[in-house]
Image 1 (cartoon, rainbow, N blue to C red):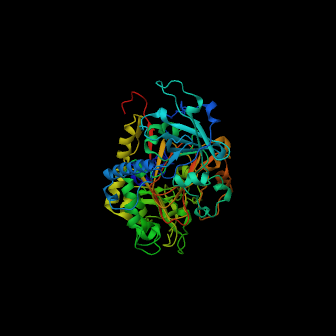
Image 2 (image 1 turned 90 degrees about the vertical axis):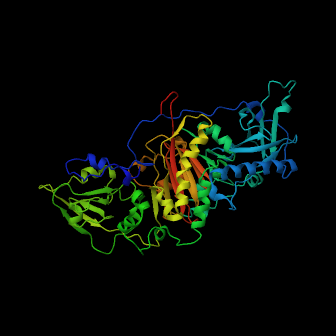
Image 3 (image 1 turned 120 degrees about the vertical axis):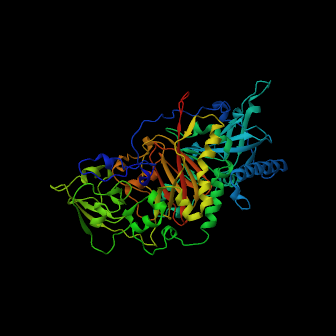
Length: 567
């Protein structure tokens, strides 16, 4: 839950820090510690991937347009479109459709559909997962892993069926000769522009090549492959999984949402502030009054200066003080989020959205949120509390990043129909996952909305709850970094006490630069309709790419329910 939805509605008692602790956010990255069952699944090596057969086979070529292949493509396109339209009525009549599957041809003229691209720390460790055309999706043993070899060759071997006799090594070996650029074209991938984060070091993008993912992880092109392998694709020690066009291929309501938001953003103001309020250069308090989305979400106010008016000093004579505070940034400072009508704070002159610059003479702007209970207990001898307040101004031309907001954020920028599509995402995804009996259970009824102008970013952090996290990109471009190999990344314990973000429009902290460039960090570039799935207990950070307009994403988690559990 975001701060505004917590159950704490009491005032701050100077002799009890428990009330302030109760206001700590229970969201994506800041929540109370609680043990959850961890996923210990490791990805089994398919029977089709024999080490001895990986290194030998003949040359192969790609078949660009065989008539039979086109027939299969058209059939799959219709299936994907039908699946998307069943749950996404708003998508009818739009031009966006999922890409047709890529079909490859081997030297012995057999056709294979590309299911996924598995990436390693270096491109030499890449492999592609394919399936013979005409194979039913449920036939797991038909999947073939082709390992990258020299001279643009990909080699592997298929499984030998029990009914087959007199099968030679050559009969099971598969080799495809294909360069990265040609393969990327077939699977609809293109180079990621470094202009999406111009302030990042160029080394951060090294290794992406033609793919939307750098470092350990999987780019998935087939929905059924993802659904049946999710627990081996994502988990402790595994990189993220990027499902291209996942909203469409999985038949999720977010496919409709992508189109609804795209249409909404074709007109209207460019900056997010102007879409949430008509007021020019509003204060944060005005935003709280005007927008339910802002009231339910969190805004990093460290980007915004205080008004030209000198800081105000208010004296609260006795408890109850009649206000509720939330963090000024992600984990520092305090800002007044709620005021009791007619309460001590309101009568004394506190206003909604005021930043508490100091309390009892102690500076609070850069105080860690965990230390706020002690700081706000600095009452005078008579039990009173003196606050120094500032009013932050959010200029209409300034970038805004609203995190962990309710679905009201979607309604305010794209209408009620778009909000209904948002609310249907988790139930439909739960239904699809249940078909494969993974014992994965959604932990939220509604997704949290992250909505930010180009360049803004969240801090590098680790989620308290070890969960499988989903990020549905609805609009703009999302750059997402996940530390899947801590042993190959610099020690970043500093992020537990400092806010270090991977912004695309502000100079990077040197620790963030080193982290992004390390081989233990995977970087994904996600487009509207893509779904990124990652292990939340890995250190990660999201960035709303520069030059790509407002980025809107939906986040929610799934946890593994133990066998036999009544949950």
